[in-house]
Length: 147
Image (tube, rainbow, N blue to C red; front, side):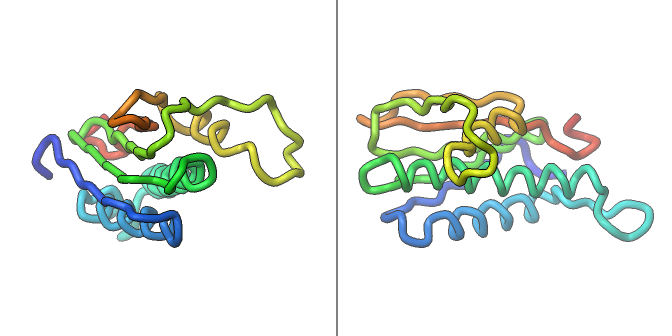
């Protein structure tokens, strides 16, 4: 079982390639934390795979929002895991808090990212940080010992 209260930080210097870099960083952290435990059939549990993929999608959405709406793009990705829940934070230089857009036409691109986060995360929000903000989300651990 991993140590409690693990934190990983990824400083970012530009928007270029940030989404993929953050997904790769998050994927490796979740693998290191054994989020895809092997079940009795020799493969990862289906629910664990779903939560794993949902986390990567939500990381992509938060980082994409920072790339699109904050000067200089995202500053840092932080992952904090205490074996019970995972907290994902993306900081940027804009002090403007994120807002859910009115429901958009699902056939049109854009404007759906925070709706995805709202639907998949247990909780999400933002807080001021160093003249900008940090947008965060939390998800419960899919592991039996973390539930």
